[in-house]
Image (cartoon, rainbow, N blue to C red; front, side, top):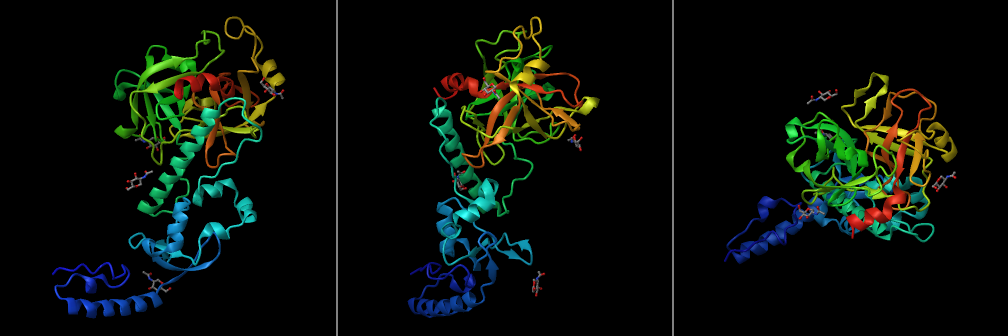
Length: 409
Ligand SMILES: *[C@@H]1O[C@H](CO)[C@@H](O)[C@H](O)[C@H]1NC(C)=O
Ligand SMILES: *[C@@H]1O[C@H](CO)[C@@H](O)[C@H](O)[C@H]1NC(C)=O
Ligand SMILES: *[C@@H]1O[C@H](CO)[C@@H](O)[C@H](O)[C@H]1NC(C)=O
Ligand SMILES: *[C@@H]1O[C@H](CO)[C@@H](O)[C@H](O)[C@H]1NC(C)=O
């Protein structure tokens, strides 16, 4: 008879002694030896300290740790034990506590840690909007769904790779898309940005649907950090359909917003995840971030590395003054309800604007760890790098019903 004994032999005992044997008696003897070894090994478990709760624990394999298994159900990443400061990836031992973390971290600690830290270890938490939503219920619910997806992926990642799981700069804006023009990838030029907002759709500016001399947008690339890096094939998608806003009438700058349908379902991973739409709820949008591989200062060199540019909200009145009505382009001046200005705080920076079509975003304070796209980069002055010149962004919340009708019909 062939008996598997590994069941009764804990992983952390000397496995070699616990292989299968053909004899029941020998088996019994080994059960005893294994049990003895287990006690021995247990007594040698290293101490560790959980850095979130400050509690002492013991290093144990993940599957033998009740607290980690419990935490996992709440999408809390286990804390891996380190060996003399280096992560002990092979053994995948976790710092095992008597109880689970969530019951130990009280609300005070949560408020100190803040929502960013919650991204590192917690379950997908969200708060309801302060006031009932007037629109965008569907987009809001999808944001929560993507958030849950994001967390389960992070958890998977932390277990399979065993890293601390802190946001690398790469992957910090996983909704960011680079848009290309040209028949084939190797010859394409990449002149616009966009934001992934669902499994199928990229949000961009309507003027990005076409690039003079190059034709219509054909390619969207996700998961890249350097403009010049060789994107993996799995991150390159074709544009199947371009849906510009029906009221976009170039050369007028109004309703500069469009949706691009991808040629296949976008596979989410650690580097590729949708961003959320601002549905018009109250948000803290005084400062937002523009991202893109845009122009660097006055030298007008395109950035190779993805740039993040902090931008400040400009009052509606000021915005209208900066962009006075202008002939065929802006006959009625800035339209507050569908356009907005964001600009610098008076300090010259070496970055001035992201690519057209790219997102203007804030961190959500309601749906933790998600970005909320509040604007689409539309146009600005060409004098980059000089202070006091805001850019104009399409106001996303004004277009939520239209976006929902196409993206989540
Ligand atoms: C780890 O640290 C212990 C004691 O601090 C030391 O005895 C051991 O040699 C170290 N191991 C390695 C691989 O540096
Ligand atoms: C997590 O990893 C497992 C095994 O590799 C896989 O089957 C599962 O689909 C992954 N889950 C997610 C959400 O990626
Ligand atoms: C991409 O650009 C960066 C910054 O200019 C440079 O350091 C890097 O070597 C470039 N990579 C390739 C593949 O050209
Ligand atoms: C600017 O215009 C938007 C859209 O009409 C409006 O929601 C917002 O309250 C205005 N801001 C101010 C400060 O009046």
